[in-house]
Amino acid sequence: MASFNWPRRGSMAFYPRVRAKKETPSMKANGKEAKALSFLAYKVGMTQVTGKNAHKGSVTFGQDVIIPATVIECPPMKVLGIRAYVKDEIGFCVLSDVISDNLDKELGRKINNFKKPSEKKGKTAKKTDKKEVKKDYTIADFEKEMEKIEYFTLIVNTQPKKISLKKTPDVSEVSIGGKKEEQLAYAKDILGKEVNMEDVFSEGDFLDIRGVTKGKGFQGVIKRFGVRIQRPKAKTRRIVGSISPWNPSTVMFTVARPGQMGYHTRTEHNKKILKISDKLEEINGKRGFAGYGIVRGKYAIIAGSVLGPGKRCIAIRKSVRPERTRGIQLGAIEKVLVR
View 1: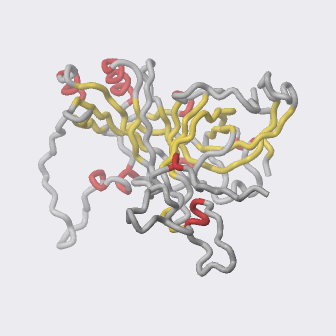
View 2 (view 1 turned 90 degrees about the horizontal axis):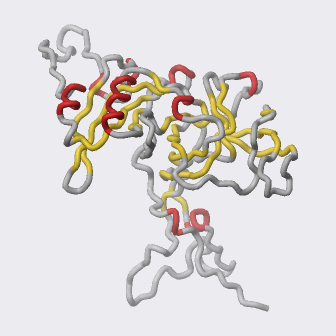
View 3 (view 1 turned 90 degrees about the vertical axis):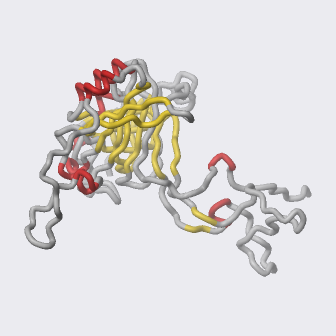
């Protein structure tokens, strides 16, 4: 009988296994067309969809198949500002921002600078300067300094209040395609307005999805890495047998150690958009989705799973890798299996 060999457990491709610095993701993207290149949405939950398999190399080509899919709700984003970047010694740095005059009042919950001054009188009232504060930069200033500016981005905020999800919006940056002159012209036109899902993507596109995974707290090596449990006679069973030799007295980073599990920033590639719709009766069941509730706005159905728990904000862009053509490929959704 062959001896049992288990050299190591746990993928080294998912390092560092640390808590995410922020829960609202942002993605860089490149494109030739002057438009927003990414979008922020909220994960709803999973369901099943039926349709005909369009993959010619598959055994079930042309047959009706059922595949798992994820529903994401896509309330329109609002452009609250334009940001310009210039070259620095070690890369790029922010030159300045131009903020829109048409801001949502809910932004004060996220950014303290957007809070309205108190109108209370007496000792509790904050002293405010009556003089108007002059803005540092305007779009005209950007046009004058176009030579040293490298590119522009949009500062956007989500509108979760429109879908009765929460009051506090998520704020992030969105890349713009095209040359810098086209980027500024597009940003100038869209400032203070809304960006919809259809303005960025269409059905059949392949996506990259970035977000923060579901957090599981501090875990040991058995659950965190799948290390084999020690024999029953061992003093301690749920540990690594030997973490390092006495000499040299160093523990390598490849050795499984207890620590944070989940709540990591991760990116998934090649997720296909099967449908973008606002027909709520096709997706909502009697009780809605577990942990989320009822979908109230425009939504998209994506083939397969999406990282993170329900109600978490995710960032999506067009895939930067070649499109995945193996496995089952649904041409169109015939029916959504609502629970």
